[in-house]
Every structure is written in C-alpha cells, then in structure tokens.
Image (cartoon, rainbow, N blue to C red; front, side, top):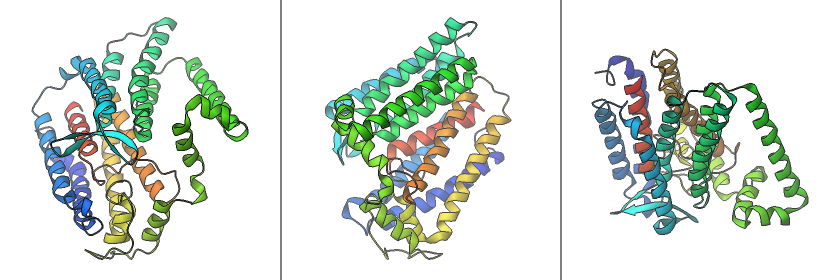
Length: 360
C-alpha cells in the first residue's frame, strides 16, 4: 500500500515519538488542573482517529475530491459564521463549537478547505496574459480574505497567519511576472510604515481605524520583548530549571497557564527533560526533511502546491511555538502540531499528511 510502505517509516516513527511524548504530558497535566483531567483520554482518541483517517484516505481516490473543493470551502465559511453566532467563548475568543462535550475549531478545517480550493482554482486556470494574472490574483486574495475576516472577528490571529501563508506560497508557486511581487512589496512596506507611524505618533487615529480590540492585540505583540508576561515568565523558568531527564510524573516544578496547549514545549521540557525537548526537535526535523524530499522527488506536479503550503505552515508553527515558549517571539495561539492538546488541529494535520502521502 502506497501510504503505509516502508519508506514512510521515516514519517511514522518520529510522528509516533511525538505522540508518545504528548500523551505522557497530557497524563501529567491532570496534576496541574482538574480542567485537564480528561486530556489524556481525548488526546489518545484524536491520535487514534488521526491514524484511522490516514488509512481511510489511502483507500480513496483523492483527485475527485478536489472537484468539489469549492463546496468544502463554502461549508467551512458557514461554520465560521455559525461559530461567531453560537460558538463557545474561551479566553476572550469565540473560536469553538461545542458538540456533545467535544469542542471543534472551524478555523482549522478552513486551512484545509482554503488550500484545496486555491489549488483547484490554480489547476483549472490557464495564465496567458496580464489580464489572466490580474484575475487570478484578485480571486485568490478574495477567497483568502473572507475566512481571514471571519476569523479576525473571533479573534484567532494564528489562523489568519496560516491563511496568509497559504496565499503567499500559492502566489509564489504561480511564478507570476516580477512586477506583481515588486508591487506587493511596495504595498506591504507602505501599509507597515503607515501602521507604525500612527502607532507611535497618533494612536487615537489608529484605534479609530482598526478598533480597540485589534489595537491592543497588536500592542501586546509589538511590546512582547518587555517581558511583562506571566505565561512567558513561567515558561522560561520551567525551561531554565529543567534537568536532562526532567522532573518526572506528578513532580511539576511550576504551573504554566495553557501548559497542554500553547506552552506544551516548556511543560514537556520541565517534566520530561531537555532530552525530550531535543528528541521533539529532532523528530520535527526528520518529518520536515521527509516531506521536502517527498515533494521534490515526486513526479506528480498537479498537487505539489498542496504539499508546499502544508510544509511551510507546518515548519512555521514549529518555529513560532518553540520561539514563543523561549521568549523569542510574541505570544499567540499557535499550537505545536502532534504535541499540543486539541482535536481540531490534530485531526486536520493527520488529514493533510494522509492526503500528501496519497497524492505524492
């Protein structure tokens, strides 16, 4: 079977290592807070379903799925609207739907459906002229802007960044005329300059333009280096006081808010040690190299972009989350794939992997 052959052990062995480390820390998290009591069982369920999805995907023809990418995309938009109206609010964000005791995050599904829809558009568009380039650029920007706007209202900054990465990689992959990239660079520089001008010299106008909520989110990001973060302080203490093999089970040095999710790297470094942290980084590195090798040596050209967009997002989340835990990057809700607790992000990552193995 193509998906489960021996060559793919370079993917599955490090993936299983990440799963085992994640489960140990989910079990350990129950000693932090009673809210985390069921995280081990639920995370085990997500991993089991993830491998089941990979197996099921290996049995179906995926080429036909992309024909209906537009409808998957529209369905995810409906879910994003639905969550704004009826979703559960956690930590000030309305990002989750509660379904029979399980929470689902539609923005994670939107990452998959947006990617599929963009690829379907690109594969069915012949670019022969300036007009063709302009039309596809406008179309891709619009279909990326809509879910980004809905997620902005939740708010979920991490998801917006993922959407923009998908758009950015897709536009680079198209190999458009250089003038478009020059124009994009000029616009980006102009908007960034204007933002920082108003931020430093006329904040009132900026608040009126972008709203109080978004302004304070950006303010926290810009001033992250000030170190006035309770979460970051505890994250750095956990990492800085870690031994090589960690403190072990039920011996947590210092509690961290969001330890099983956004700050899983600091949590596992303290409980399972620097050895575990190095093993996690090595496992990610092997998976990254495997996926890059897979896409660069594949004869399948039609769906290479699908893999490229996932790889860039996958590597970005690794770097950002670990950098955030180390105080090198601003704190945002970006989980570590296959390590952080969360059914939506975990299952979508498994679906992406299953589709990549099947398509390439």
